[in-house]
Length: 340
Ligand code: GAL
Image 1 (tube, rainbow, N blue to C red):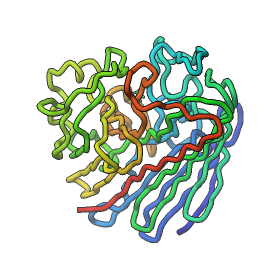
Image 2: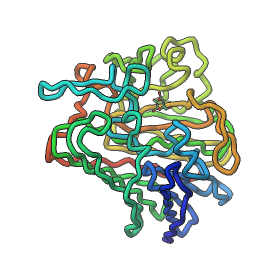
Image 3: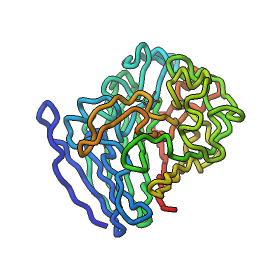
Image 4: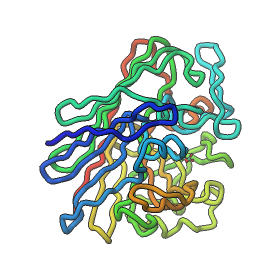
């Protein structure tokens, strides 16, 4: 394993952003930024041994600050949407920042993705931590958060989340990497398998309504591997509302998904201890320049965001996102790469 650190440019207020890159003996590497605890690059070998960067990103800190696409960022305090940017907890109503119409999205106007973290190298991992102060974006209590990015010898990225607060607060952490196993083009030809029987119905604003719909007989059925583009254009109200896939899948177990590309022969397996996963086909991605001058385009990547079910405060029966004061949150998600 080899670790190197370098400057990643400056934010608009002059603050310097740092990068750490961890490379394994196979040549695979991860690059993490202290801005947003962001996975800036993830390079894995294809079937011919050539390294492919399989996540979208930018070349400089200023672009991460400028664009609001959450590329590779750590999302918090609560990922995805909370209706009307409010929740009540222990009889108290908390108002959150509304940054998606009237709703709260991915932690607010300045979520964890737009904050500077403390970052250090620790063995075979890159560790990012920060204290989210009481009242940040409307959330109650101080919350200590730590995200560890491990790269294994056999090309798996393991992300480990730990958090603890001094007051009861909702927490739902995820990583917002956009995967493209070809390193360019759209993902419509990628093959996807998702181990879920049901998904959350979304309303017009992509908020779960509380109803769980069976995937069976719908374009949402990925229980058997299917091309992402196969049914994405189907006349299904859930696809039309979201402009494609943008839904929480209710995972059947720890094996969440397999994504594969015939073009490069790269296969990615996703495993998690969380109950849900947002399958998002990059429908809101606008054309703009990304890393190495490569254009980022609509549906140019797929996000597989492991999470608690979104909008849980408003949906009866969804697992609670509340982390009690002094309780420890611990969660792990693995993205394991191989070739075929
Ligand atoms: C996803 C979310 C999408 C969109 C995107 C960011 O996690 O499901 O609806 O908000 O993030 O552009």
